[in-house]
Length: 287
Image (cartoon, rainbow, N blue to C red; front, side):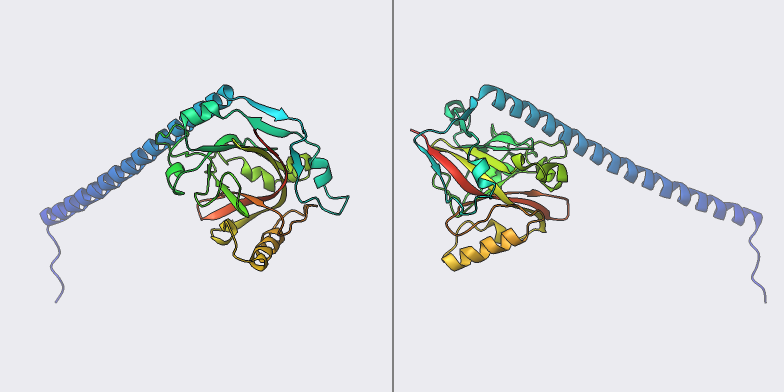
């Protein structure tokens, strides 16, 4: 026996129900889309505002701070010179150190421990340090909340004497602020220019120069940000590892008599890092 065919009225009602359901689905999707768009727009607004504020702050800090080059004098020390006369070390130690007046910086932020300048990048900032590695991920130099954060030293490090491995972090901002220009070190235009292979770091107690010996990208890990080692053998193994990771063949050697400066920032949203390692080659105590 065949099913009874729906009447015209029943067909009309069924069609209306389907139409109402379709409209409801479209309305829900439209509301969902507008919500996502609104959230994204708000996020973009705050991101742009954070960038604007951090740019103004960076420019003011640089303008208000006396940063000058310092020629060598009787207090200047060459650190762990290599035997190889072809090592670029011998060219770099002829370069001037950097000296910064920290008086105003320390008044503005007592967490200030240094000033870092990396050749061939936009990195030219005061460094801060507090009791953890989280605070300056979302606070600016003046301690206002800002997702751009600031350049900071690992809380485990000694900012006066330096550890075997002193680590400095900052966000990799798309507009090039903080460590956003550190990605330049993986471009041939950066690493083929040997004059770029220098980091200058000034602190209230001394001016220092560091020679780059390794740059690479790596998935997030804790090994390369180990500040100190219990044995000479473990430190040598560490140096061999980070030197061997380099994507660029630098002339400089490194051994357990050296102290290392490590710069670390995010490369992408998947946890990968851009890393730079340099060794201390020159310093001058400040009196």
